[in-house]
Length: 439
Image (cartoon, rainbow, N blue to C red; front, side):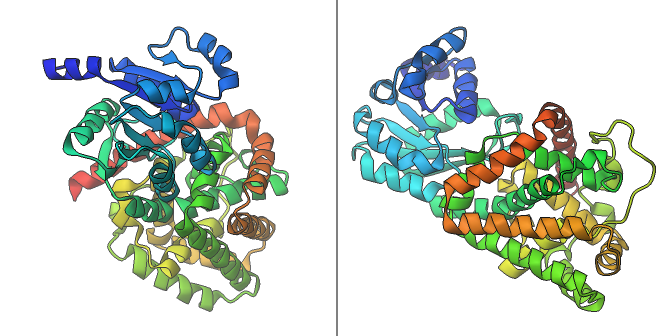
């Protein structure tokens, strides 16, 4: 650390309003890097949090007014649906000339709340770490949105977040929202639909013989990883981001249309449609350059003694996500710099299905002629329609109810699934790095 860094850290106070999972991650990492950090959550939790975090290097304040009056950079780490209400409450107490930012997954309503409720002398620089609180921040994308600022304030924020060792990308609020919708909305819809479908069938897939193999391991682990987090993390992106609405609706439409072709046995029509998808999205991929393969993912199973043999699968969830990208005109590789670990995994397994010689054709054959997965695919299609309706209506209460009912069903496996998921993500990031170095 240089002398200038030491002086900067001693002279500036960092405030975090909202000590949920991501707010706590920031408070800990910044304070461990020797910044002076203060934080708060709901006022009624003050005594509990003061006791819980008494040995941490950051201090807990009673409310956001006290954080706002003292901090030089204030980060609102709150649910997207509550951002306007909370900024309206604490924004007027902001210290003169302070920098204010947020950590929500949708920046347009966040920036609107800041412009509406903050004093005009404040600077606005928002952040978004494109990963969950359980993921190592090193090498992960971190978006900085310098909305209203000068160079000195921007350098302060960049100096602060350097301790995360993330890959920093600067975007406008509009660019951020479009890219996060492109890289997260459909991905989340797919994994959420898988979880609901398995719950509807009353089956734990790792206990079911037909869910065997590396691709199935990836689906299971990531679906459980999503449901082990808090519902509002995903609801905020889906409901508050208009771009996400279009994408989730398209995912449901693609799922329904593909499933209809499957049950009608229209193999040629299904093949023609999916070959167009493959050419549009994956034309640059050679089979020797795949990000992932089934063998790499084999070891990440929740089933300690899996039965022998894999059952061919229609892979409807993967076919539908690529079909969605095609219909939306999205080339997912264009946004790889701002992609989440979940997105990279799903892109990797989707790429594998479409680009491994013979595998797409096998999936189409199974989809049109084999009824083994027909019930599962029906439940998946219905689940995708359910999520699309909830998001279209903008109903946070329905989203929470559907999410938490499924969460309760899978809860016993979360700890193990997250441990395995971390290893899987580590493996995939290593593969991404290797491919980037080759290219």
